[in-house]
Figure 1 (cartoon, helix red, strand yellow):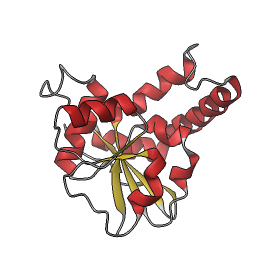
Figure 2 (cartoon, helix red, strand yellow; figure 1 turned 90 degrees about the vertical axis):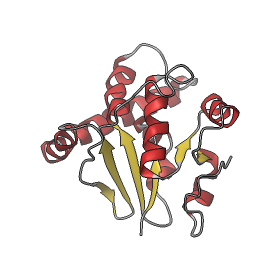
Figure 3 (cartoon, one colour; figure 1 turned 180 degrees about the horizontal axis):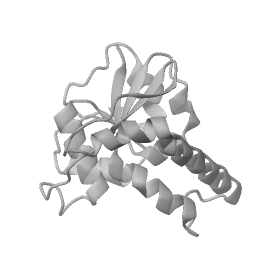
Figure 4 (cartoon, helix red, strand yellow; figure 1 turned 120 degrees about the vertical axis):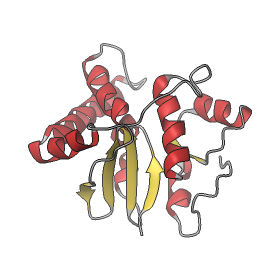
Length: 174
């Protein structure tokens, strides 16, 4: 059985180790974070602080965009966009990694505390009952401080998160 995580699309571009897990992993990605890739790729603002790293990540973002625009994958993603909370069929990356695009429907439940993509991530995590994988310390802190009932894993704890026996419990993990 695959280990499932909710994650922003850009995290997969930034952290290459996410594509090399020791066991099968399925990343659930809000569609709005896929659309955010276009803004990041074309923006003069850096994604990474070091210029070499920024150029590399923007190259990877471009590769991800091309992957999502592949006619076969695009057709799968378009199916998810037909209704709120609909999911695309799995988009395989390699033998251990697949992506599922979710047409998450942001609502104002957490809108005053979190930005729209963060809100979608929280709602997806609660709805799909799988943990969030993120590197955003401020987001993690806000989730814990506001007692949001989701499980969090920092990207640095990725290997631990995919280990057997770490299934979602609804508890906080940092």
